[in-house]
Image 1 (cartoon, rainbow, N blue to C red):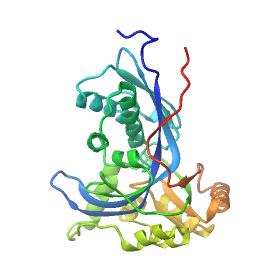
Image 2 (tube, helix red, strand yellow; image 1 turned 120 degrees about the vertical axis):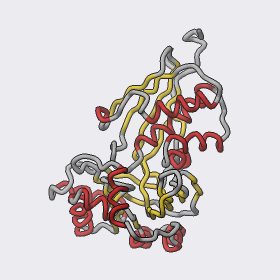
Image 3 (tube, rainbow, N blue to C red; image 1 turned 60 degrees about the horizontal axis):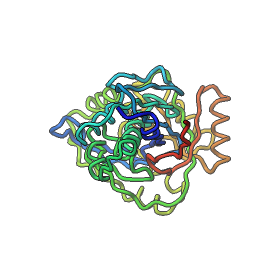
Image 4 (cartoon, rainbow, N blue to C red; image 1 turned 180 degrees about the vertical axis):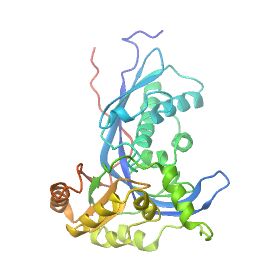
Length: 312
């Protein structure tokens, strides 16, 4: 057993939340997933994951919605650590300490962010130096959003969302997020509603829209706003009508755009600058349509190691 003084210091990695600027849903694939075309943007709400060597595998969670996050092997961060250990021939057990800021079950990929952070943290802690493409392959096996959270920035996701290609994008975008709309919407429920609504129609292979790519190259939020799109939005609103009320209220208070993030229930609201985001957050809270409002900017970088000071 390695002594405490000889063992590597714990590694802390920060990973961001995501918003889908567009999400187009295509036909079912042979693996049971829908073909997707999405444009991700990483935004400045973060979870931090600290990996430390220990005698037994495990994880603990604190921060926002901590009581809603499992700490057994269904936890995506712990699954990621175990998958990386297996991929590299077996490593010493780790304990993962997760500090959450990203809403749970909100369509912002908080669990996927934790998994991405765990992969980067454990790779550094163990010194396994797994090549980037292999790390992304492991990430894809954990969940469709995990590879993007390794990347960050703005990117197109294809396949079932796990094949990530960086997008040429300019500008800084100011977002307001309304996550706390009763209980979270499960992704399977939303996709089931989508399948029921589109039954009997022929779904085309989805492609990113030229209009969105052009808007991102311009760096202009007012150009981006009218081309935000989500094929699952109608289904999320159908299952949770309060989402539609938030969108309507946000537009009434001067938002450039408001859209469901992923499969919901979080509403992502694009604001006209930092002051506009503050005004929207205040207005949505004051009118009672939103009990919980978060602000963030994007794009931001993907999972990255934070500097730490070793305590002896």
